[in-house]
Length: 245
Image (tube, rainbow, N blue to C red; front, side):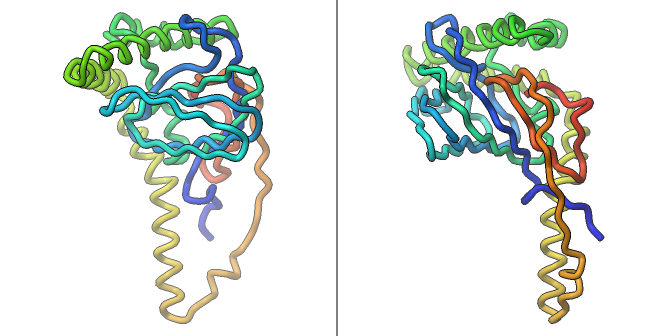
């Protein structure tokens, strides 16, 4: 009998977005990028926006209850919560990978330049620490935005520099990431292909292994974008040991 995974080997969290003002006066979360994971924001209640930077420059997408926004790795993104009522369901690719350091905050080079400085900037032990991390990320995000305002070449140069720094900060985590992908989403795909082989042989015995499991949300934690409650893959993840996301 195979392990019971989340559908497709995903990670799901419920998020109440921060509602305090950042350095530019907007209320919301911490800008960051994922190196390997696509993400979907489904708006449960309230309204707001997602601000994004990619090779095409800065964009802002307004979101309201019932809206779903999907974006790929490399999209530097930031949740905006102007009315203080934005709550979303976050659906992440690659099982627990986003909780193992795949998400890199858009700090300025001062904080991204070396492992020790980055670890200090990332450390969160209180809500004040979470806001401080958010504010430093917003400052870096605004620098990226200003680079694109100066022209596409300047923007591309600044964005590629940020990507390079993000890659350097995560270089020691690749083996762990590969293990998570193989144990989670790859295992789900392999199981589905095996089941397809069974069906092609008119063999439905694997359906006799059907089962279910109630998945409870973990305790509320301070994430990048707000107050998080994560629903963990029952086959591979526990609350202990996961990095802040």
